[in-house]
Every structure is written in C-alpha cells, then in structure tokens.
Amino acid sequence: MHNPTLTSTEQQLQSTLDSTYRNKSPLVTLWGLFKGRRKQLLLVMVLFIIKASPVWVLPIVTGNIITKITEVYSAHQAGNATFDPAAVRSIVINSIVMFLLIAQNIPTHTLYAWILSSAVRQVQLILRSALVVRLQQLSMKFHDSTHSGKLQSKVLRDVEAVENLARLLIENVLAGAVALGVALSVTLSRAPVVALFFLITVPLALLLTGVFRHRLRIQNEEFRREVEDMSYKVSEMIEMIPITRAHAVEGTEVDRLHRQLLRIRHSGQKLDTVNNLFGAFAWVTFQTFQLICFLFNIWQCYHARISVGDVIMYQAFFGMVMGAVQGFLGIVPPLTSGVESMRSIGEVLESPDVEQNDGKLTVASVKGQLTFDHAGFRYTSTDRPSIEDFNLTVATGECIAVVGESGSGKSTLMNLIIGFRRPTSGRILLDGVDMATINFRTFRRFLAVVPQQTVLFSGSIRDNITYALQHVTDASLQQALEMSNCAEFVNRLPKKLDTPIGSHGGKLSGGQRQRIAIARALLRDPRIIILDEATSALDVQSEFLVQEAINRLIAGRTTFIVAHRLSTIRHANRVIVMKDGKMVESGTHDELLSREESAFSKLHALQT
Image 1 (cartoon, rainbow, N blue to C red):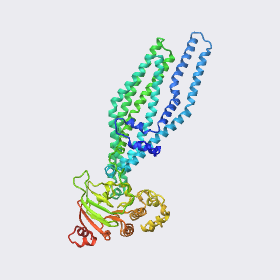
Image 2: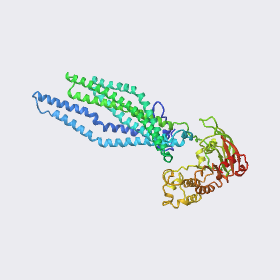
Image 3: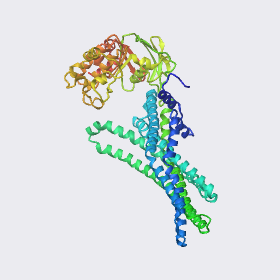
C-alpha cells in the first residue's frame, strides 16, 4: 500500500522487499524492480532508436546508391554515357543523410548510456539495500543454518547478475525488436516473398531455445551453488588461518579448497559446453538460412524481378534480422543465469523466517525483573529439549551466575533472554509482561551483551565504542573509558581513541578487546547485561582488569554471567547450575560450595 510519508527510495525498497523472486515470471519481478524508473526506460528506448538509426537506415541508403551507380554503369556499358543530375543528387542526398545520422550518435549515445546506467544502478542499489535490510530482520535460526559466505555471494555476485540481465534485456531485446520492425516493414512493402524468410527465423529461434533451455537452467543452478560453496569455504579458510598455521596443516586446507575449485571448474566447463553448443547450433542454422535467402535473391535479380541494389539491401536487412535473432538467443544463457540469481536472492528476500516485531508492544523503559515460567526450548533438528521446564524469578539489579557442563543449555538460555530464540513452551516475563508480546528491537536498546569473543570491526577505538550511538559527549566517553579500564592502554597509543584496531581488532590483545566491549556496554547504560564467558580466555593480569571493569558495569543492573571459571562468580547474588537443559541447583556461591555432594561442588573440585 502506498504510504505518502515514505520517500521515493523508501517506497522502492519496501516494494522490493515485498516482491516475489522464485515465481514462474521472474521477468515480471524484474520489471517491478524498475518501478519509479519506467519513464527513464521509455526515454532510453527513444534515445536508443535515434542513436542506432544509422544501422537501420544504412541498408536502404546503400541499396539506393548501388541502384543509381548500377544504372549509370549500365548506361556507360551501352555507350549512352551522359551526365545524370538526378543520380548525382540522389547519391549526395543519401550520403548527407548518413553523415548526419552517424554524427548524432555521439550526443544521443552519451545521454542514452547515462540514463540507462542511472536506472540500472538504482535497481542494483535498491536490491542490495533490500538484502541488507532483510538480513537484519531474519531470525538467528536462519543465520545459524546459512553460512555468511553464501550470503555474501548473493549480495555481490547474484545482484550483479541481475543487473547484467537488466542491461542485456534492455539493449539486446530493444535492438532486436527495432531491427525486426524496420526489416519487416521495408521488405513487406517491397517484396513480401523475401519477408517470409525473415518471419521463419522467429520460430527457428524459439525451437532452439526450447531444446536448450532446460539444460541451461540446470547447469546454471549447479554452477551457482558451487560458487556459493566456494565463497563460504574461502571465508572459512581465511578465518581458520591462525589455527591452520599453528598446526602446520596448510597442505590439508589447500587440498580441501583445491577440491572445491576442481568442482567449480568441472561445473563451469559443463555450463560453457552447453552455452557453446547452443551458440554453435544457432550460428550454423541462421548462416545456412541466410545463404538460402541470398541465393533466392540472386535468382530474382537474374530474372530482373529486383535490382542489384535490392539484393544488397535485402541481404543487409537479413543480416540485421539474423543479428537480432542471434541477439535474442545470445541473451538466453545470461538470462538463465540472471533468473537463477534472482531465485537465489529470493531465498533471502522471501524467507519466512523473519523476526516478527511489527504490531507488538514498544518497550519504553526496563526495570530489569525477569521471570521464567515453565520455559522450554527445543531445536527442530533434535528430539531432546535444550531448555526444559525452567522456572526462575530474577529481581531488578540481581546478579545471576549460570554454570554447567558444555551442552547443558547455558547459551540457549541466554539466547532466550536476548530474543534470538523464542520459548517453544512456557513463557518469559519482563517486568511482568510476557516477552512474546513485546517488540524485541525496542527491548534490546536496554540490553548489553559482552561475549567471550568480542565482535569488533576494522575502524578506530572510538568508532567501536560509540557504535550506532549519536551525539556521544567527550565526558561520557571518557567516563566509560575509565570505568572499563580502557584508559590504561588507550592513552598510551599514538592516536589514542582514533587509533585503528585492524580487522576484528587484530591489533589489540584479548583483554583490551574485552574492555572495549565493556566500554561499549557502559556507554549504552543498559538495564540488563549478559556476560558470556567474558574472562575465560584471558591471562591473570587481563582477567583482573576485565573483572574490575565488569564489577563497575553490573552495579545496579540485572546481570547474567555465564562462566566456566567458577572463581569469577563469587560475588554473584545467586548461582544456578544447569544440566541437560534443566536447573538442578540454585543458591549463593558459598551455599552451593558447602554441599559436598552438590553438582556445583563437583565442578569446583575439577578446577582446584
């Protein structure tokens, strides 16, 4: 529905998000992507006809000039050579017309190319923006099951293929349509029999397309999937380089990628073979047909039914028709590839696995009380629940430590709080309100997460700490630096806050990255904090500095600490012990430790 408050670009973006890409009419979808740019396309068509007019007019001019020259030549041969002003005037006029038509190509082609580029680039922009928006809207379930490398391939390679498809359709189809129109109009008016040769080429082209279309689609789909697999495996390889190098298994990794590259080569060669076979059949068919047409026109000229100039003109027009039909056939492989890329994009844009927040309660403030009421969660891929019949009430400002063996359900429990997962049974209440009814995007403004592996991007320290925040004052930023123990190392850096940290913060130590994450959280002043193994990978000195920063961060805020290192949770108000998705124990650190046979005591004994 049209919303007058949206800008034109926003309307295009929403329309792109609402379109279908895996239907039976992808070209209709492509036409829909040009909504708001169709007047530009109309102007492009007009400019194309004008700029390419020398191509359509040249056969007529050539035929006219050769006919006049032939007449003069015949008169010379017969000994009746006289000055023929009509013939000269005809040659001069035809030549001037061609010179003018050729000259106009410079301004009209430049304008045509600029307007076409503007329209197509806008579609590219809107399509990539739609993918970015949808990727932010899709649930964590979708992202867990789809590798980032494949998603990158869709945003980059598939959108580019759709853009190329749009250009080919506009340029090749338009050129072919005009060529067919001009050639048929002239030949039908002068020699209807010759026009029959032109008309027969269309069903021949359709027949060839029908024979190869199914095979082309299959090979394009296979090649696209192999490229996506390569994309995510290369991404994975790059991430694994430190581990690969540390264990001296570079050869194994190279072999693994080499096998994937061989599969791409094999798939690409099969696609090239089908494309080339299709092109060869088309070329032989139409060249043979053009030769037959030429011999027919020679026969007509021999019997004085048409002139020599007409033979050349009809052959030129037949060449145009052949070029148009072969142009149509030439777009079949990229058309198949573009349609496959459009379906690939549809896997993201049409995915139903979107986090639904529209129409739900907006969270304007959070106190921090959380109640788990028989909450449970089961992944669709497993029979055993990850969280089962979980009951817990957390008071505002309380610090809860969550411990247990790997696979006990700790991370899933945190994902339920964040809203990455929704309970499949029971419910979770936030300040007395069922979280199933709230808009999680508004709730997360009051939430901060400090994970074990801090996620930083390649920018400055300032950029990472103030990420997505507007109008941060120097005073509040400096306070966050002091409270997170970041000032201790930031002030020693040459550019201080403006120091670049490298890809994923590679120029910083683990402790420094964690302190930046804590500073980022402090600056947002959250009401609920999740600390997921925040100190488990740090040395003693770094752990001390990070733990000191954490104690400042959690003061007065509802906090959940997931920890394997039990020494870091002594000051938690309560400790809950998880096993097989259930809470088996709850109490203070000292209470649980005093029970000799408790699960907590056994975990503690393993670390001492």
